[in-house]
Amino acid sequence: MTQYLELKRVVVTGLGTINSIGSTINEFWQNLIQGCSGVDKITHFDASNHLCKIAAEVKNFEPLDYFDQKAIKRMDRFVQFAIYSSQQAILDANFTINELNAEHVGVIIGSAMGGIKTTQEQQNIYMSKGSQFCSPFTIPMIITNMASGLTAIQVGAKGPNSCPATSCTAASHAIGDAFRLVQRGDAQAMLCGGAEAAITELGIAGFASAKALSTRNDQPKFASRPFDAERNGFVMGEGAGILLLEELEHAKSRRAKIYAEIVGYGMTCDAYHITSPIPGGLQAARAMTLALKDASLTPKQVSYINAHGTSTKANDSTETAAIKTALKDHAYQVAVSSTKSMTGHLLGASGGIEAIASILSIANNQIHPTINLNNPDPECDLDYVPHQGRSREVNVALSNSYAFGGHNVTLVFKKYLS
Image 1 (cartoon, one colour):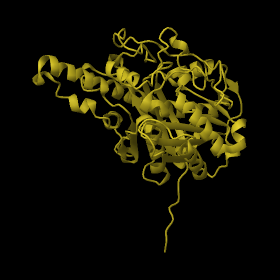
Image 2: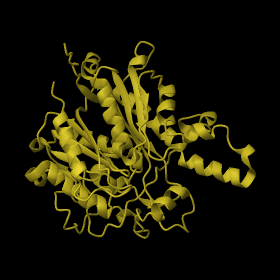
Image 3: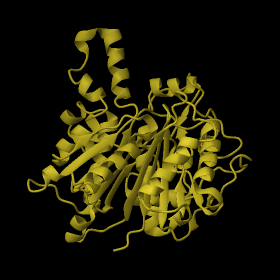
Image 4: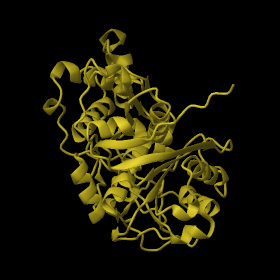
């Protein structure tokens, strides 16, 4: 006889982030709603000889405020961001990990570039001084899974642990995969999201050489302009966005604050090109359709879409077409906005902070704006909430993420109803 697994309901009970416009959830949200840009001149290194001289850097982050010197020497910056934001999420949820529940709490944190800062620094040491001077922690600091591994060590989570490395969909894959684990009963709670720290000489040079970055160096605050006809590339960001997902009955048993319910996860692949999305965005549309089907929702129930919205020529028009294909006529009734217009593109962490923005839109019935949208591209003709945020009932929100390699992910969040 076929046995059917009873799927659990999964809710969001904790949030944590650090990025260019906030080092707490409240600071991040207030700056999003007010349309504040985190983009400025690069300070992490001398960018005077680079094509791109701007980025959305995390500001005023002093590792010694959170880690001892010994730990810092063993952690790349992206891991520091992951741990910091995970601890924020745990505190926000008033959640305790102890020996009684540790095996039922897991961690999935994705990243696109991993320890690129360490890679570059150790390569420079190798070339200038020789192999014997490289740090014995070089490999553990570089490998991408250390965000998940070291976070688990820090918080004591002994449950499922993994690390998607799917470029700019990494955090969204992490959240979706964590959702599935809790839904199936394989974990009671999961820390999930993404972390990135790729604003380095190599990171900026590589993306600039691919002509992916904006070179609006004299107007950094106006450089990230999703859906605008004058956009000329994305702006690199850094940071982390982490959610604590929890099985509903477990959350209710401890009277947890519930931000929203996660109800759908769809993923596809273009199978088309290493960097360019397939024209028309058919597989991106199918990811949205699959996510809505997973959530048992119809397109007409969608209130808001947090777009991937990178400020690149190819993405913005393709995503617009995909939304129209997935939502049909309702596409013109849905509010769509791009967090990246303010935070820049956090690569593998972008889906984490954008999921947080989607969840807070539901919790607060507010939608943040897409800034710098002065001259809309004729191919981008949806309601992108330009310039000013908007108060509006948000019952269902989609969060879209797309990546080099053709990855497409859509997450569906819903207002929690008991």
